[in-house]
Length: 216
Image 1 (cartoon, rainbow, N blue to C red):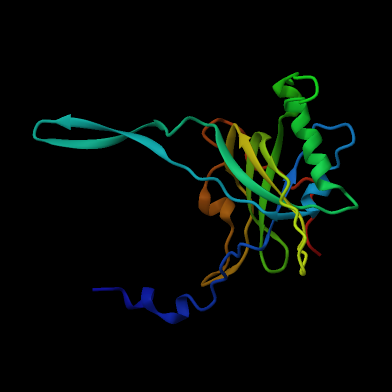
Image 2 (image 1 turned 120 degrees about the horizontal axis):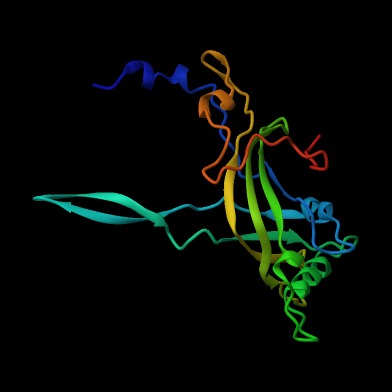
């Protein structure tokens, strides 16, 4: 029989859902001499959190069998699609094109060293007051595909967007404080999650960088 306390409306009426439009994405640096990472953050339209999966293997035993994990599905390399607004003042498309040129220069045919075009990024979710509630870190991120959008003569023009596919080496959740009223007061995820490092041994209790732009 279901627990009536769990089903009570009083237990859920105060819960605040996370919203897909309350977020920002911060590049820790851009591998360009004149690249301003704030330009991409201010013109961000769409990003995503990572997808995770593991391979499994079946272990026979007597008349039965059981399943265990057999490693990361496809390795650690992953991809994500991001959309930026192309604005005249910051020339978003030119900035991203120059980043792609560091990877492969179509005029000379030269390929760049990975250290010259890789950077790190963070996707940060916000609460309705603009406070950080969740942070994902993407290590070794760089663009792999750049779509600058179609041009068309039409009665009702629309804004130009730039769609970018990024590859990255690793993505993981950074342990951050999230506060919200629950049945017993204020909840601290640092206590409830109970960890200070991810499986790779990196310390994940990282402070918020001063240059991250959060809504006021």
